[in-house]
Amino acid sequence: MNPVSGYSHSMRTVVFAFVALIVLHAPNIQAQSSDNYLTRYIAGLNNAMPPEGEPAMAANLFAMNATQVHVLGEPPGGPQQNREEIRKFFSGFKDMFSDWTHIEHSRMTQGNRAVWEGLAQGHHRETGKPIKLPVVFFLKFDNGGAVREARIYIDARSIGDQLN
Image (cartoon, rainbow, N blue to C red; front, side, top):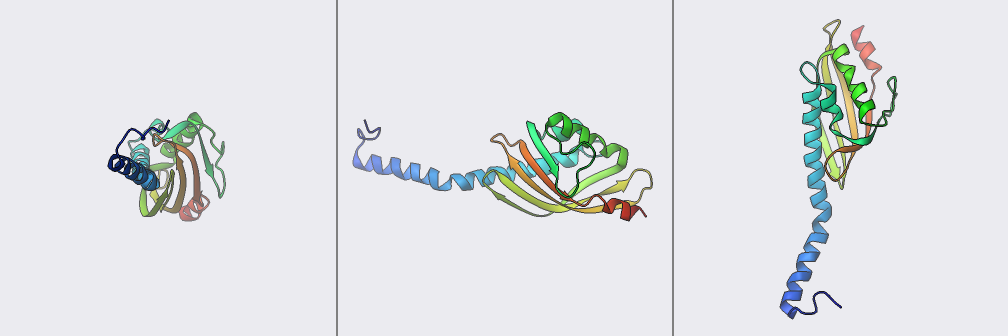
């Protein structure tokens, strides 16, 4: 049985228009959600960084079975395959940097994916020297806004160049 057959012609028209509106705008709604998820991710990441932040705060931005890959060169222990490995990765920031933040240059979202480009910067804990690194995040979110997959493009070798 047709679920709208009991409705008048005008009511069926309204129902079909409403369904069409939802279907046509669903990708836009998801992109808006991804934009909000991205904003939350960057803010959460910055709050989790030194001097006050905790590695678990950063790890909690990820799904339990998330993957984090550093495409241009994996740090020791990478790629990280779950939230605990991601927490361990972020625990190294307090040892290396006295402060660390991410500054946005651009972003794009489509569906449940986002691309964020910016600058990661802070001060080397031991020398006090400033460090600035261009960074690009390719993120895939789950329906609740947790990161399922993160591909990070950063040239961490340039830290050594900046410390010399």
